[in-house]
Image 1 (cartoon, rainbow, N blue to C red):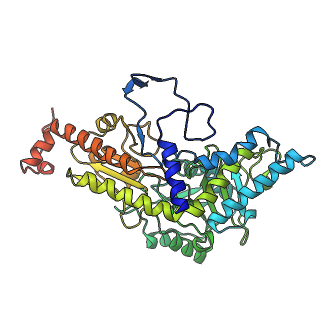
Image 2 (image 1 turned 180 degrees about the vertical axis):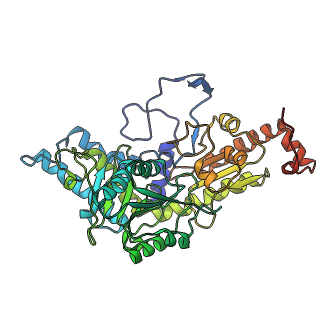
Image 3 (image 1 turned 90 degrees about the vertical axis):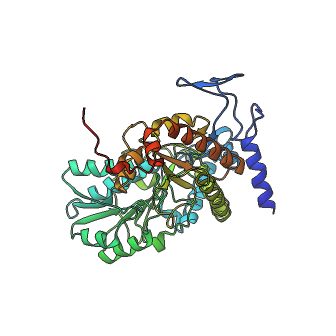
Length: 450
């Protein structure tokens, strides 16, 4: 009961419209320079107020309790954790090691297996390039999937330019890989298999435990990008049999600019460092460890361990409320990716007979995206949805709704109202939708070329 009251208080703090200057609570910020009494103007777009936030796969707000744990290490306990001759260094080092243990506890690892990095992108680069460079004399082949995060795909392309071979596994219409196909693609010189645990665009949960068993059978190291899985689904490095796992702070209500890399000690996995320097983090990731950020990711992991079950139950209810609310009012709504194997906080929907860019622009009062934040500048349809076999016109109309710890029922209801209103408005202007309503099968129409 006390936990529920605390949650309600934090949610209220986060969503309050009252601005309190100099507050130490992360969720209460000073007014933006772009705000004025008549609304907010940015990038040529004017809206009446700050939009409600439903883009939790892009980033999450810092939990106020996480910020409270970080602040002392910015203000009074500011020592370098690698300074061994005085109190300031000792207390920072102790805080770093506490955070290391908190991250390890959430994934069932030993603190000695955690290396702090700047984020999941760096962890992915160390894992993929680092392993293949270390074992390059005997291992020249990598297996990954077509729906991985861009930093994994680009790391693999970099290896291809160096002469390594990469197999990109296709996925089914549900976004899941075929385990028999994976087994067939393994070769004697396969040095790494890299499969994302939870997809950032469509929320699909891959069968990582089964993949881990196949990797163990063939004695191939298994890497997984678990940035979207950490703190959201149960992660167990022993059950999953992973050799390397990439983690991120800002996806679990922690700070940006910090992540972690799990590296198995028994059997030991080796990597070639991607950065040279003072030899911090066992020489794998040189550079001064940023104590406040590391304390933040540790605190976020500790909170996730305590509240993950409650969060999942609550978020599942909000996801159902959102999906049912939209489907009750409009037709032609398709869920992208498996509904059975899916993280509940991710809902990727396509709306038939609607132009995607127009839909996004019309939803100015709701902060949502059409895919990964790392590729959202592209006007091309999502490569993840294309890998699922989604038609190009439907891929263009996809919207990713990200629900999180601080999302309220009122926000979900407002998002439903605005989404339905905008889809209906755009369909009224669509000649294709008119034809469909009249019973015409538009796929059978032979369009004339001019």
